Image (cartoon, rainbow, N blue to C red; front, top):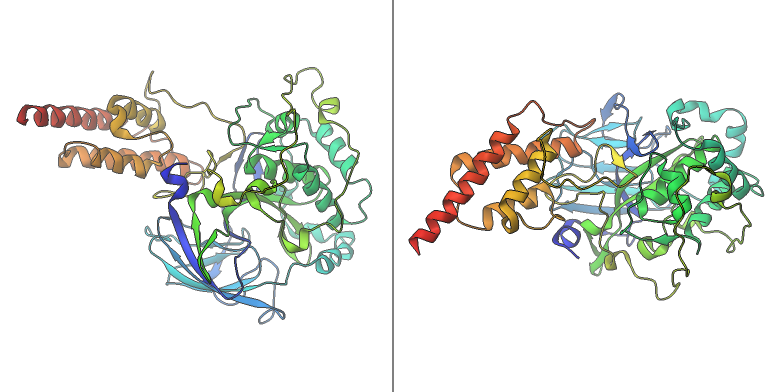
Length: 456
């Protein structure tokens, strides 16, 4: 467990108990290994009911009230429930219906923000989702852009479609198809594991072969398989509901960062499903609970996908234990998410596993410069689980004081790294004096430590 994982990012009080999730971002474009996002659409004031499907007035049914306070979280998107909601927040927040995101262009974003939310708690239901079938048959999916059904070149679409089709062969509607995909991935054949290192350009097929991964792999697999069935689907990123601190008050920590798939139901909107095993997520959403545990007989992806080029699969020898079930608070977070004094999510979410930079070789971009600086500073830079902002703080607090020029260079380099990792479409900082910043900081650190040793 590391500081990033255990650090609180927000807390909330609720009249309806623990929330399911708080979503910040949605992703629509997948290249076989990474998720990215198209630019947002037209924004409107964040007033009234916020939901992609139109509503007149407030939604009838049950609702709950949340008061949310952010702590160590700096985002341009407001974490909100994945159901129709209204918000009361500081000025400057607007709603993007195309992405279902509440957006701010303020530099402070969510930092130190308190806002309130009223959310519908019974909007998603089996009955409502099944009722969308008539609209589906009438072409209701045309209301969403085609990119939510697109599949990239380079992945084994036919192999994945074969598996998805077999899984959903007995489904009578989209709701049952979604449950079949969800339950397959939550089944005993898959293992939740954050310590995985597969490679390749077809991350979904690789995952279905190895059957080991964490939330982003499970969510991506369900999203892509849904698309092979021509179901509009996307990836969402945010937080699980956290843990109760005192009665009625909940704390969300970095380790609660999570990704999940959302499938589109015409006339109803984007609906979250939960394919990641309960070892991380706990129970499914109430509307996504199957009537009984299914026992599907499905083809093994290894028999259908990339038969001549697939790597030898590494399958678990035993199924994960079903009891006791750890809660999200028992887990250690997700290597692909950087949560804390930085950003929640990479604008391009990697589904594969990137090689860690070593700090050796040329400085081609901000990541190379950051790795070089950490190599030069050694233990003073902390461990590699820290976010850039946490690393900056470790450097400033981990030895003799740096001068103003070095502190400024360190801050500029940290911003360049955060932009490369988190800014939409990414910025690699290659046009900045990266090596000069590294030299200023590392030289100042050596001189400060030498001076401190001389004074002893």
